[in-house]
Length: 367
Image (tube, rainbow, N blue to C red; front, side, top):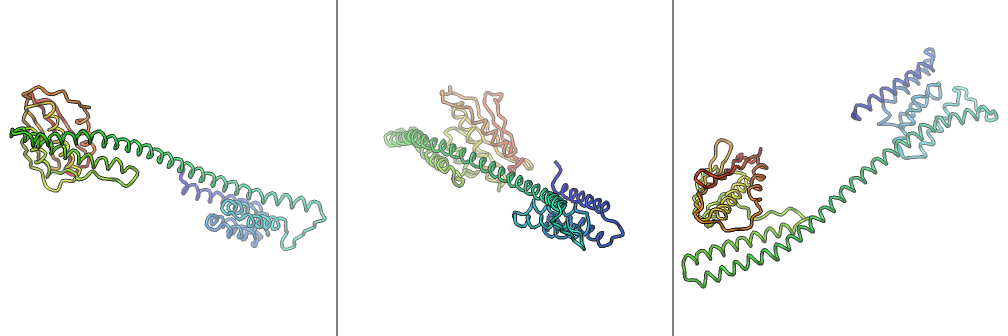
């Protein structure tokens, strides 16, 4: 499709050329006044978009003095396509009609002659044609704009409907999480607290304290998540506080397995990269605890050039794993998170029966 900024100058040039051809056919070179008026009318078409009324007025002398009327008709069409004043259009059409049937400098209006009325009707119809055509173009343009507005409003309505449905689903999910999950986690925390107080075994007391601390932490994170779900339709709400590299040591210490952390990461990594590293280590240690009971783990982090890498390795399990529910979405989610930051996640078993997960990310978190 040819852009409008290209077609408009071409159309103006074509109209000027047609008007000059009309001058060449209808005006003799020995008539300097008529020739000057006709040429002025032809070149005034270059102003028709910016000054449509002035352009039409500049073409009237040529209509009055000669038979070169193409420029006036083109100017009248442009004026009709741009103005909304019907009275102005009627006056301009009448001015064209009177100027065209007049024979200047000695006009002859013999209204008793039938041919005068025929000529008057023909000229009036000639003037009305570009007016009607210009009004039709203006109406078509208005309809196109109206249809575009209706389409935009319909798209906006669809978006609002989708947001409303999403808000209802998120509100329902928030209620379920609050009513079911938080109740069960609270029950776990209460039972762990009772066990911690009632037992005399040091190991059981420590395990109960760990369970209670993790339950409280889970409830806190769940509360923030529920607030995010309930904030649908409003301004974005962040899950706070967001984990960073400073929280990794506490994560490793409270993982419930024997794990070692070795880090050599630079300072000032973007928050998105720090969260990705934290969530990767968290998921890896969770998988070790679920699928490799009794195994030890090591977490090594470093950087090479503009990339950071994290490797979590565990030994072979020493006890059979308990059958825990799993949707197998953890590693998939880690891969998607890394891909968004321009990195990769690889994982697989090791030769000694353990498992290794490796994360590589650009230090700036971009691809």
